[in-house]
Amino acid sequence: MSTTAPFPYKLIATDLDGTLLRSDETISERTRAALAASVAAGAAHIVVTGRSVAWTRHILDDLGYEGLAVCGQGAQVYHAGEHRLLTSVTLDRQLAGLALAKIEAEVGPLALAASRDGLDGEVLVGAGYRVQEGPLPTVAFEDPAELWVAPLNKVYIQHPGLSDDALTKVARETVGSLVDVVMAGEGIVEILPLGLSKATGLSLAARRLGVKAADTIAFGDMPNDIPMFGWARHGVAMANAHDDLKAVAHEITASNEDDGIAVVLEELLGR
Figure 1 (cartoon, rainbow, N blue to C red):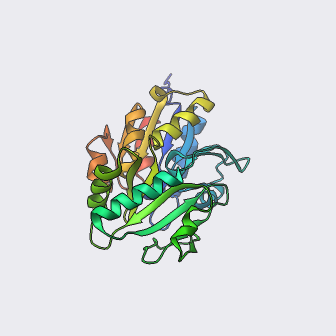
Figure 2 (cartoon, rainbow, N blue to C red; figure 1 turned 45 degrees about the vertical axis):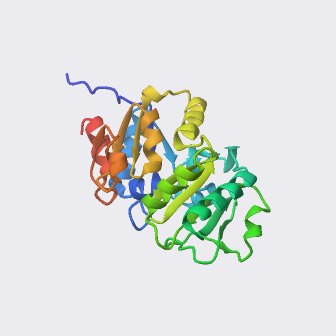
Figure 3 (cartoon, one colour; figure 1 turned 90 degrees about the vertical axis):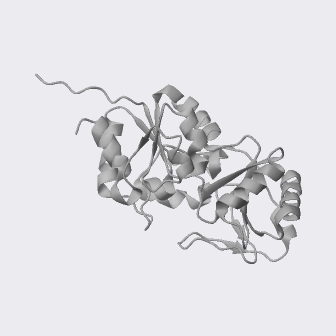
């Protein structure tokens, strides 16, 4: 009589953009099926994304996802089934303003955007800031003072001449003792509370689920996933991942367009 080995992980942590989602913001039927089979085999699935809750909820609802999600680069732990924000960390606005001034003193004027805290937190976008195409809502602002009138989870920065990697590097060198700076995708460089990362948010959520880092497999594609890979037992980078993440990954799978998550999960399921 043949026996099937138990699924080796209790928690599957997946990034969204460039990882779980395809470029059209959908999740393939193959990946949905592999995740469902993994959950049936005893694992929990948790979404860990740089997106704020307001920019994540519609995807979780479409997935039929009712568990916990880590949003806002680790700042928010959200209960999708209850549509409730469980924890939230905000950016010290005075420190953020000081950090922006110091960065601009080094590289010149920046284009700015910011993510307000809360379930319905608006994303404010200033002049010259290039927003990624898609259905995500934004609110334009003209006066920079508008950024600071309500609690924020993060500030986004862009530079007209520097690449994302170059901007991230100079910002970290300039203000790394005040705030954290992370590159989360093309055109997405973020200023975060010092010490905040996907790993801190994931560890909080995992504690609520009663699982540990040693029980976790994580999937991602960008440098902001590096702390999550450092926390989890096994980190899997997508074929389309940034080289910095591939360098620390335990494994590289197929791209997000080619069901890279499903490829790994199906193997673990013995399919």
